[in-house]
Length: 414
Image 1 (cartoon, rainbow, N blue to C red):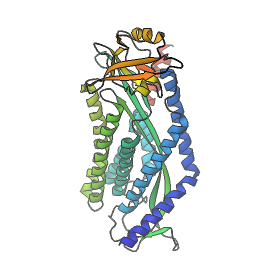
Image 2: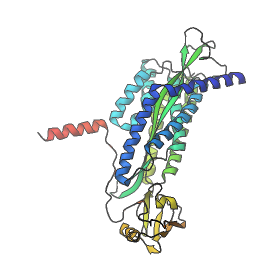
Image 3: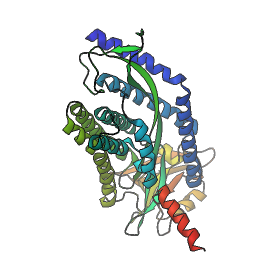
Image 4: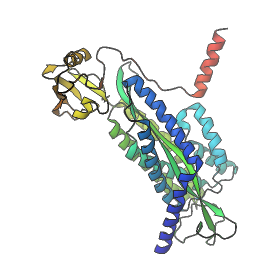
């Protein structure tokens, strides 16, 4: 058994390495690059500079995407999840249609669950429900790992108008990863060496009906793309990405376990197919509930100025100031407005000390010096006090909503 395990592990690693030479993988990398270029343009508009070079962002995404894909590939192969009769030809079009209603519905949890329920109720299309639900669970498990490790990067400072009319600061988190993943397909051709996988005794039965102990599978390389987006108002981006990752991890584990039971139970197939969309939507609604009911973190304080974002490698960043900190004094002078800060920095001091209260309520003093050039600015985006911010972000309407609005506006002009 150990020898079989090691042989299959080596086969997975060899097969996975071939993903890097697939043109589709680099097409997905190009798509990721275009997304980060769009984010960089937004950063320049808001902060006046790019926080992280686009090249660095893309390389980070490739590294973490390869790591997450390798973990997911091991899970896919060792659970015996095959791509036969997955019904992806039905899932993808439905996912795109759902995206027209709301962009967040572009997810296999919704489309896969609906297609599985239709298959169970009407008998068409004939798909491997247990395998499809297991695939959805593994994809979200990979996503949770990537969010935990890399989800807090590429935060964009924003201002949002809440339901009560108040404007608060926050962050829009956006990350994208190219994901190579290995897939098992039932092989019926001539016997090959090195690329086929016999059915191990320890494989769970998340496979298509009719697979026997003598069946042989072949490993194929697939390419996917995963993305993470979130709005953070009540906590730091680091804390939010960790809590989101843990919730998504719990959802994915439950779905994978349900898929294991669904392999041999029709009732559990219904349970897994229902849990996929309902469970995922519950995660979204719970996250929004936390934001709606929670106390916003990035609001103007009664005394001092609250930091929303610090520019990378600027004086504030080098001192150690972080989003959410409240600056009370600079060089002993109270600051209660951006004009107060500008008055201090207008003198271009060579040395500054800043009294701060951090997000845990601890008072600290940070110091920074530049005797050669003087300090011209701190490199901070503040939460505005008594003034409206220059930009307010709202949830983007769906494609159908925009189409309806365009038609209505055109008819209204006639």
